[in-house]
Amino acid sequence: MSAIKVEEICYDIGPLSLQGLACGDDDREVVLCLHGWLDNAASFSPLIPYLTNKRIIAIDWPGHGFSSHRSQDAHYHFIDWVYDLLQLFELNDWHNIDIVAHSMGGMVASAFAASFPERVKSLTLLDSIGFITTEAEKSTAQLRQGMISRFKNAANYLHNTNIKKTKTLHPSSASAIKARVAVSDMNYQQAKIIVKRGLTKEGPGYVWRADSRLRNASPYRLTLSQAEQFIRDINCPVQLVHGTKGTGLNMITNGLAHFGPLFSDFVDYAIDGGHHVHMEKPKEIAQLINNFIKG
Image (cartoon, rainbow, N blue to C red; front, side, top):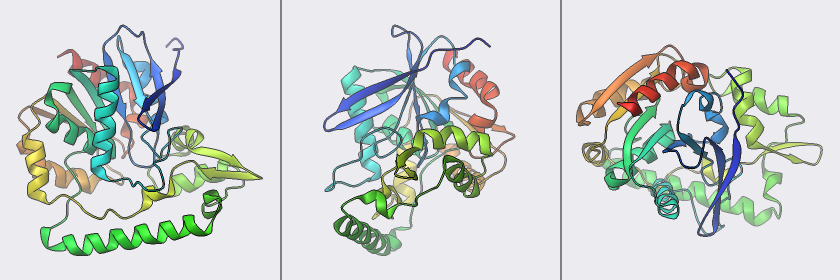
């Protein structure tokens, strides 16, 4: 296929700068792509060339990729991602937008679609369905774990004038790519695409750009009944495209059982691949997305 022009974009939402990648003419309808936890906009790079006749916008979530980190007195709560989306939609005056979202991005997009149905035309979930939940009786333990995690991270900031010193220093980009491969089901070339946007040069080596606070334990989670209510409140068409193997398979299987029957308009496609199946089979998955959006 012929080469396409992908450009860097930037949106200012309050004190934060949201960076990202875009492709396609400004006057075309927008397809917004939302990546997963500790990934970045580049995870959609293999897919973008096959998404046709649209303005494709893939953002870096705050704390990821080239986007701003939250201030020292802020944190990365799940509901804050939803607010980030609302600010982005308000800034661009977006209504009735098609969203393609992977993993954590799919959870945020699902909550947003439930809360702001007038904003979302369709939702394509990539290896993501429903939410991570906790039994109500475990709420106190979850809060304790989250507070301790936050306190320890804050202590690192307090005792290190340069927070990069608390991160692993990789001697080369290849070292960082191998480290990412070791904790995922991606191959080297797939991981390289994400890692390239996720590294910054630091002295003789490289460190991750991502905010280390992203690894803090969540102080709270939705209960199953709360999560199910969010899904019931989604009224746009939803398609799930998921891999048949890899690190996310159990979550998909459980999510289909708990949440699949609750969608009002839902279709599911299983594709041979892992958690980043959209990077493994971009042409096949883009065809599903194109057809879904047209339909």
